[in-house]
Structure formats: structure tokens, C-alpha cells
Length: 384
Ligand code: GDP
Ligand code: MN
Image 1 (cartoon, protein in one colour):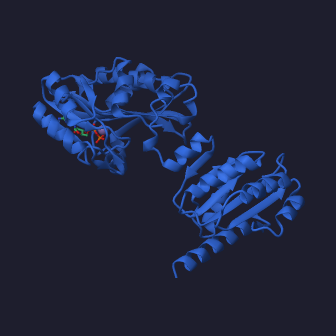
Image 2 (image 1 turned 135 degrees about the vertical axis):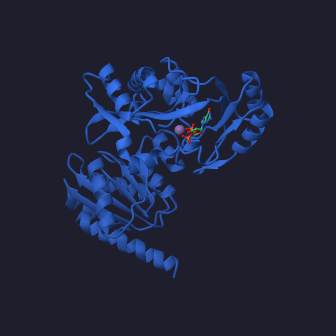
Image 3 (image 1 turned 30 degrees about the vertical axis):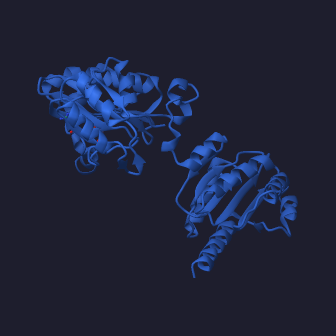
């Protein structure tokens, strides 16, 4: 789950991380009032759940309340990477001498948290990572040890931070790590960490992503979820408690078991098709659940065909077949549905499907071939 910069900064402030003073505004007038109260040069910053706001024109400096008002009226309502700006953060501007990058995330290949520091932070950090990765110092942390002083010193020195910044930057890193662990983050970044002309360090940007799987215990943070920033179908699926991920193809995929569904996505792709989603209906797959899953998949108007891939273990194929038939009987469906049923009581399950509008397939391969062919024909019929 993503949270806004100002929310991430509020978290960091609890760990004694120095952040600029400021407040949030929803109108240009509010922005002017905050700038007036601060009484100095401010920066007006779009609050949206994407990075690259600076390059998109969503970060502007303002010397007076009038300028802050003008900047806010330009930024509010702006579209940044498909998201509309509804709030701006107005805070005291930093006098930047150097911009550093601090970040902590999960390195899945290493199965560890990785801490990264660079002396060339700022809006081009992605380019630095791509073209000169040696300019980013990295340390993988042993979870039993966590972050120690020697880690932070190695990072700051290897990254080539200004010597005067090494000791205070270590404090920022330790605080960032404590926050990262405490809020169950999957990413915590300060970019840029600014070394000011006066020689102080301040976090002028902050980004924290929370692990969705930890939201059950991060109940305060879970309240910060903003549905309008999520895909609407994914939001609906999550409300129904379904494990659904939207993709950009046109073949709806449902199966029982995450591994089976992921394999199905691969097989469909290999047959030349493009999956529209991932949906794990789980074990059992009773009619009510199948119906709600199928309805969700069909909310996506790109879907031109559906593939069910069911492996009966404890789950019985005849029960699943009944579930799918009950569900589809009550629905108005005008796309082909291919079903591969195998495992416990598969013969009974397949018999139930005979003579219905549901198209059986003997194997996953065959099911993928069938749905890909049906969908490509459907495409031709609609767009001759
Ligand atoms: P992002 O582009 O979404 O990462 O937004 P940032 O908050 O990182 O801002 C982008 C860039 O704007 C920074 O790298 C700075 O160069 C600049 N910027 C942000 N805040 C300030 C500030 O307080 N003073 C000055 N002079 N520049 C700032
Ligand atoms: Mn940034």
C-alpha cells in the first residue's frame, strides 16, 4: 500500500528524523495561508501516489504567499501519470547544497533487506542506478542483527557523502530502518536527503510503501488507504475478499491455487494469448464464491473469454462443476468459457458439463489453446 509523502514524513518525524515544517492544502487559498504562516520561501508539492513529481512539474518553489497560491493552483488538479492531484504539501524550502539518496527495500533474490545510499540522489536516481550502479552503495542486513553503526558508516563512506554528513546521515539511516521495520514497510526512501548550505541534513522527500500482508496489524496505517488511487476492479475484488490482480490482456483466468493460476497465465501467454487477470478462487469453490469471482473478472470489459483451470485434490471436480454451472446459470454471460477439470471425481465433473455452454478441455494446454483460439475469432468477428 502506498501512502503520501506528507504521511511518510509524519512517520519519520516520530523517529526524530528532521523534516521541513509545513502543512497540507486542498485549495490555493489554503496554500497561501500556510506559506504566510511559515513566513519564508516555501516549496509546493503535489501529493499523489507516484514518484517523478518534480519532473512532471508537481514541485514548485514560491517566495511569497501569492506565489505559493499561484503554484498551488497550477499543481492542484494536475494529472501526474494518470493520477489527479487533490492535495499539495506546502513546506519551508530547503537551501540545497547536495542531494543524497537513502533507501531500504527487500531484495528478494538475497532474501534480505538491502540498504542503499548514494551521494548523487535527487530526481535522476533511476538513471544513476541504470547507468552508474557503482555510485549506489549497498549493504544487505542480517535480520538477526539488523542495522549496526558499522553498516551505516560503511554505506556513508562508500557512497562518498560529504565527510561532515557521515555521522548525521548514519542517524538518518538508523531511524529510517527502525521506521521501516516498525511499520512493516516494503520500501522506505528519503530522496533527496538534503545537505543544506548551512551544513544541516534534512529529509525533503519521503516515500514509504506498506506491505499489504501486514495491514491486518498496521490498523492505523490501513486507514490511510485511498481507493480512488487503486484500480477500481482491484478495489472491488479486495472488498469482496478475492485474491485478484488485474493484467492488461483479454482472457480472464480463474483457478484454484496461486501456483496453478500463475502457471495458467504462463501457458496462456505461451499459446499466444494475453491474460486479463490473476484470480485464485481457493479451495472448495462453492457456487456463491465462483459467481462473485466470475462477476469480478467480467467487470473488466477487455475480457473476451474466460478460462477456468481447476485441479481437484481435496476439492472435488463435480462440486466445482456444479458451482460453476449454478453461478453461470444465474448470470448473463456472452463470452466463451473454457474449463479444464482434473483430479478427484473429474469424470463426474466433466459429465455435468456435457451439453452445457461451458467448453471442456482435457488438459491445461488444450484449455489454453481453445480459449486463445476462441478469443482471437471473437476479435475477428467484432472487428472484421
Ligand atoms: P519527486 O520528484 O516526486 O521525487 O519529488 P521530490 O520531493 O524529490 O522533489 C523533486 C526535486 O525538487 C528535488 O530533487 C529537489 O531538487 C527539488 N526540491 C524539492 N524540495 C525542494 C526544496 O525545498 N528546495 C529546493 N531548492 N528544491 C527542492
Ligand atoms: Mn524524491
